[in-house]
Image (cartoon, rainbow, N blue to C red; front, side, top):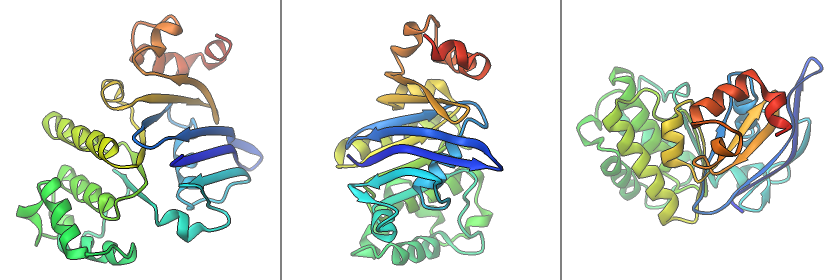
Length: 245
């Protein structure tokens, strides 16, 4: 497995933010981690990234226990999110080179040119990231996330700042990345149309637990809902009822 999470727990002031969460992400798989704000998604991702320490449970990336060999595990991982902007006073090329050196990317110049081409960044290579539009900044962020050809790619609302055409292009690129490499993707989004298009499987979180799991195209009907949007609303409003279904 690319990612194995078992019994993951995290509490703040005695209140569980993540409560015994377990799931896996396989090679070539795009898994959606869904749920309302406060469900525990970002806390879960932060623990997978090693930004937060877990109170209990285990995380293994590419078979490597993150608590035993954090650097080795995280070298196989990368991340992009709308709230994790790259340094704005550095150019696109400078950002990619610095992060490439941090990840010890081999043949770095060639790899940088590859991601610049993939994400259509050639016109911006010498521009400072802070001067780019939010959509352009996200494309640079995604290029950074691909630099080390990660086994596990974590994406938190990666298309939130993109127009529909650019968002479709990014979705296609992420799907191709998962299909063509021995990599897995964990994707959070509030766009249920996007989730249906991109994800092979979804995990619905509520109050720190995984409430529902399955194929996003079949899961709504299993719970008496007409669409994934309707199911999302139900998870937010009536999680206990769904959990018993």
